[in-house]
Image 1 (spheres, helix red, strand yellow):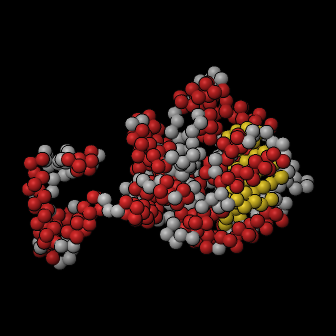
Image 2 (cartoon, rainbow, N blue to C red):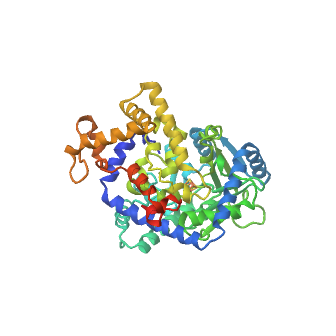
Image 3 (cartoon, rainbow, N blue to C red):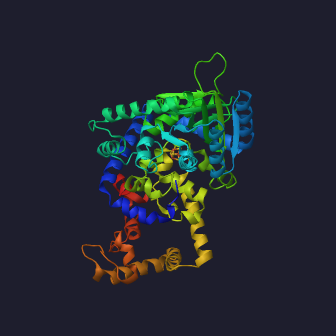
Length: 487
Ligand code: SF4
């Protein structure tokens, strides 16, 4: 998927004008949020498991080199092949080479954000290898020639009617618009592709260093068919997906499904250790594991952003984000949307290629509250904002806004002057106000009020009200009333 994050503002304007998209997002994210809430409410050990997951990730990432070495050794000891890819091009070349050597002309794929990140489908198609996505959401967006708009629900922006129209146009579907009918049609269509495919390509949710096992979670069963029916299985993982021990899976599998879809456990959990062995009836005859860097080493060396490597791609931070809920995933311009995308995209592509994304947040903190591995997303966004501003200052010097904020900061540290200027501001702005607010500031300041409320400074400012309340006898003993505290 070619990144277009530089055009974030244009994407936002388009998304906000699309009421169908906003309705679809509100319905889907609202459902995910309440499912997650219910799941954790009925799971008292959830808090402790999140702490445990965080600790495991910290340990795994702190000794990533050792764990990757152990993983590679374990995979090869069980008959698999391991390939390290420095970047997207290298990873695509490796997969194409594997396919060519075995004369593969058709590959089936299960859902994988890492393969979206490296644009594997485009590379394989370019090399003359047809690729068929087998996850229903991915299948839909492949037909629509679009990228995913959510980490776990790639076609969340599409309505049932849109999917039916797509199937009619691209596959000659003639059935009704109901979900069961559409699913049955897709299932029937994909079965034949599974049988004909010479190679199955999957992602990896977790890779266990001590055993060389990869874990894949899903709800449709297509990943299981992708990894076991074709003779060759290629699994592609970002290098941060490694966990030290098999026992660690017991922690992650329980919080991943709850955070993502509110399930106790995903419908299918596949643990694959190397290719099919003698006397085994199922499984690919050949197994390849491609371990991708593609900018992750840079993150590893960055003390501020390193924790973004702990992400297990559950999508919970997207569902609660007021910005994502309004604009959807495509506006972010690359594969990773929402709060984690606003961190990963500039971190992977460089801040200059996604300068607006760190600002696409209200910093409300809801994302950090739900993150199962407790990534401090608002703080990481602030770190990136500081970098973007510093870079802008270095290349273009200070802009007018930075002088305004500097003056504001100075004023806030001089209380008497601040109070006097607040009074003055009310006096100066009053002629422009209607019903206590100013609809449009004049001249170059008009941009500020185009999308924001601008209330007239209060006649009795907050600090004056606060002082008055605390000077009352009931408050002087240090216990303001409930009303006072909540106002
Ligand atoms: S940052 Fe946290 S909440 Fe967001 S997708 Fe990653 S693990 Fe899930």
